[in-house]
Length: 421
Image 1 (spheres, rainbow, N blue to C red):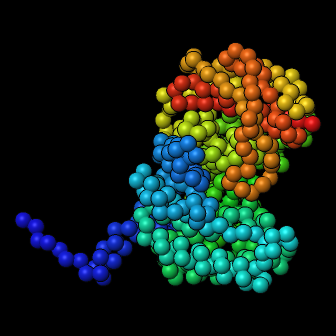
Image 2 (image 1 turned 120 degrees about the vertical axis):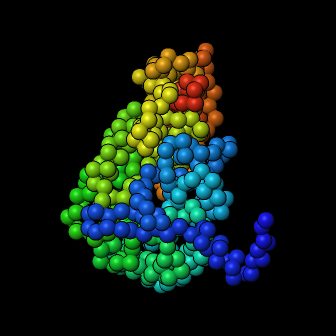
Image 3 (image 1 turned 90 degrees about the vertical axis):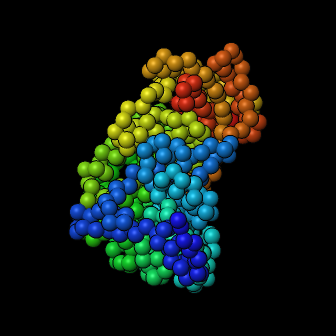
């Protein structure tokens, strides 16, 4: 027989806080740190996942769970809303909840010297922390992403760093149970963090190509805080070779998979200084190209996805994606609406029947927005697989994509640029 319990407002708030507030802290000493969740070691096996759902209803948080991830990362308050946090929690995923901070340049009118923008961000950040500090999915607060690096003038960088430190202290007062992370563009912000942001709990580094230079910089500067890789993946455009059109060459999926594999192995090598990281990217960000970063394509899984899966789960996938062996265009400079001929070859490890698709997109690089490029209309010609695709009717640089599907939930992708004159 059960006795009915009447909840007073105070008792309800107490029970809510106890039920929904995981205590996250850093234990250990220099080089032997651990992230602790409710006193238990927690090593981040993460994926950067800015959107829980895709434009066509894809469930990216489900893909993160299937990946073997235990945490995901967002970049801004608009991404990590209640729906996102609730969905992550339903899959047993923790969230490094991002709070976007714009950088100060001579063009955007933002300054951390005047204080107006600082007050706006502070209000947004503290309100967000207050609202979700007891949510069960919250692992940490991600305050800022590469904003020190992209801020132009030195006095503004220092003012921004000091502002971040003051804001972190205020976040700690509101929520002592979750650490604060700042995501540096590589190791470029480490000296600013060391000198001006002592309140920061964990350093985040967005690292590409190899972890070793970033670990080396952290050691050289004798940073007394652990770090996570807030992003990791294959080379970024400025690290890449250029094609005849002056655009960065996108490498194939199997090559990308090698970088993800090596990053995870290197993180484990430096465990103790490193507390884990977030593979970039799970979802549909269109920075650099429609396929440059994503370890998936829509809800299809690519080679990089399975490379991360094998190291996160220590299991082998039941089925592997197709491989694009070659992909050539008969020309890279075209007239408007002219057709470009495609020559390619593919294979599937399990000899699954493959389907093919050709697409064209815009080709903007180096723009810090979630959605940068978009597919444009282009007629195809030839039997399946298509052998020709039409150039757009507007001048400019574009990417032509070959997409290959195996009917088992996997895909492969590769792109080449064309210049429409």
